[in-house]
Length: 212
Image (cartoon, rainbow, N blue to C red; front, side, top):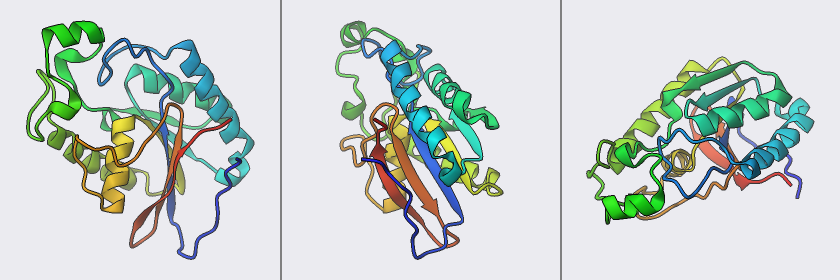
């Protein structure tokens, strides 16, 4: 199905396009790893890039702000090869810091750190060398609000980021309780989620849209 932005009764002052990076190698732990997209991931992002480019006259995306982790940097650059926009890389949109597990082979992490999984952590329990779920949540919300303020002169901005970040942002906006035990919002590889910002509120307009 082709998604078209629908006009809403409220006056939207800003739109944020939350874009998840393309697929990386799932044999390795994610988080703050330095691994690139796999070829399938690049193709996924290319489809989304083509979709956005074809509808740029309607979307009017003015800028791209991307997590500075390699897989998101690559995603942002593939998209920007089509859109040709100002682009900024920031730590503020990074995935949860999984410390020493970042980039480890999954099978090695299971052996060396048995029982250390995202959903197994207590909310205030940190990954070895990383952050806790509550620290991650608070960082993402604080960073999202800072980025909105920094980009308030733009009407539409694309944030290229990660599954966990998108889940926290959407949960916060909709008032859903966020914990590391339950995923309130799904964001597949190279998917699009849209947030509407007004003077008085924020709303999730679209979640997990994938270009075909």
